[in-house]
Length: 174
Picture 1 (cartoon, helix red, strand yellow):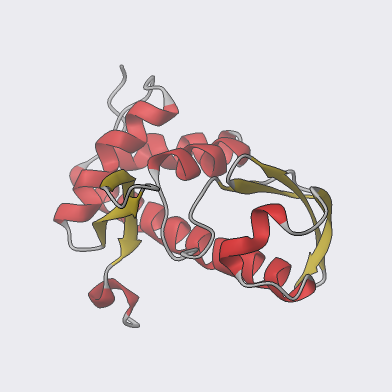
Picture 2: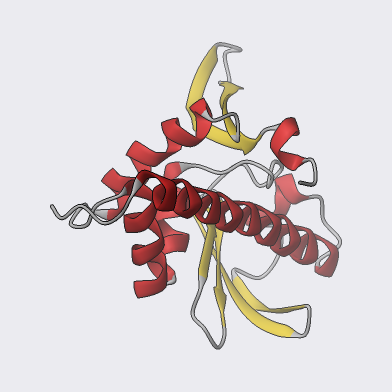
């Protein structure tokens, strides 16, 4: 692995990464809200109550969507940027490692370079690099873990994945 930059530049790169994560969360919320409005359904019932694929317009830009499992994959018609809301449609303000891997991967070289600069080295797989960076952003007070608890048909509670959200402090304007 190759070291990339000074600590000061790495801090700046982490701020840029966090800004892109904020953009991702905002985009994810807007896409789910737009699709929900388009089909006149609350987000938590989106995955099964409308066509399994289709198109929508967000801010004059075309997106395709495709329902899969418990979620929806959105793909920008021109740039091919992907937002995979893999589950928990009722909480589009949350994100997971998996959602970020899809998003940053779809940004192609731009996404990879952003991750490499924030990590301070090259050569890591995207998922491994993001898994290393999320705790750093959490420690910096920018994101926080949210445990999603669901109940099964017998009423037993089960942890259902680790999700993150932007902290209230980080939502404040700079």
